[in-house]
Amino acid sequence: MFEQLSDRLRETLKHVRGQARLTEDNVKTAMREVRIALLEADVALPVVKEFVSRVRERAVGQDVMSSLTPGQMVIKVVRDELVALMGETSESLNLAARPPVVVMVAGLQGAGKTTTVAKLARWLKDLQRKKVAVVSTDIYRPAAIDQLQKLAGDVGAAFIPSTPHQQPADIAREAVEQARRMVSDVLLIDTAGRLHVDAEMMAEIRTVAESVQPAETLFVVDSMTGQDAVNSARAFDDALPLTGVILTKTDGDARGGAALSIRQVTGKPIKFMGTGEKVDALEAFHPDRIASRILGMGDVLSLVEEVEQKVDKEKAQQLARKISKGKGFDLDDFREQIMQMEKMGGLSGLLDKLPGMAQLPGNVAAQVDDGQINRLVAMINSMTPRERAFPAIIKGSRKRRIAAGSGTQVQDVNRLLKQFGQMQKMMKKMTKRGGMARMMRGMKGRMPGMPF
Image (cartoon, rainbow, N blue to C red; front, side, top):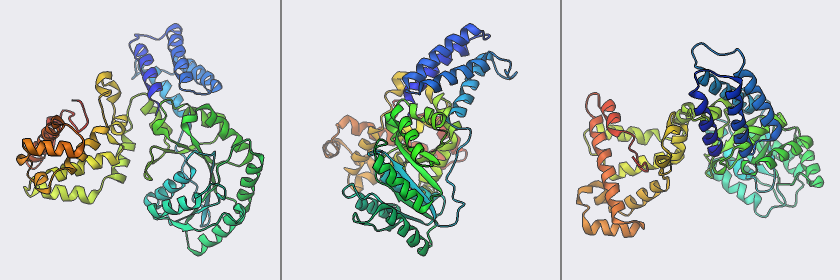
């Protein structure tokens, strides 16, 4: 997300950073480029005008901190205004109401509401320690109820059955009573997709909302639709008292215009963003972290949270105990480390959150290949247990068999074995005193899928 905008803004601000002093002329030139970058990112025109005006006013004003150069000050101003644009603070769900807290999810057809309900259920259950129930009032889309039932099973949420023969408002009312009997903390209500021009369907969702008085009414919107996303949110807000927005498919959106426009245009906070298809691919929306990411400053806090949530601590401890006892680091262990990395969004997802990675040369960044992680796993899976335990026995004919079994080339197998050898040496260094520091020096940035 934001790749195009990030590239343009960093290039523009690079020129400003080199200025010995700021004048109205060079700020004006920079702001012209910022304006073009925002418009290309599909940010709403009124939002762009106000943003550029505020940045220009502050950049040529008097609020320059003594600890910063003028160029650094412009970058700070741009970051501060990006944060203000998306909302000063992260706004989470209001779960303070009497249980079951009702959260209704609405949105356009195809925006990913049902999947988002499952992601939200997992987030509430695993991270907020809530007992969650879900129900579908979508009586129109074939298999919508069955889809939610399957997803509820995947994330460990209680599923409340409904049928296409019931009225949506009746389903919602009965689900609240059933969730109360089940002593659920939160009830998530999935609604049917609709078009904002469909008066009959909009009247129906108003009836559902009035029948259960939800504590939260969240609008799910496809970020890739850009300005249409903003217009849809505004139309839904006219019909329903929305409390927040969830952006979906942000992993496929290189522009980010919806994220930068929705708060300003609708006044509704973005509460979450979907970052992939898996049920754990949902992140709380933090305006300050997103602003830093846009400007290439990284997002270490989100990275730490992701490690905390997604890395299997038991497996990590088992590996640490194994290495500390002097037992070898084998290809099964190597595969496990690669798969842990994939859980965290792959290399591209990690690099996006690491400070300074925006300064990687373009030809290097372009070579970061998450697909290589899958190829590495495929090659290891094509080995016998003995080969994974004793990689030294993998010679010519074995390499050819592994390559054929994984759909790769012999040189790919050679590259895997070389990377494994480097990782094995690092693990040996870790068992010695001061080993971690030596290991980090030895890595020099080399990781599976990295071109260096």
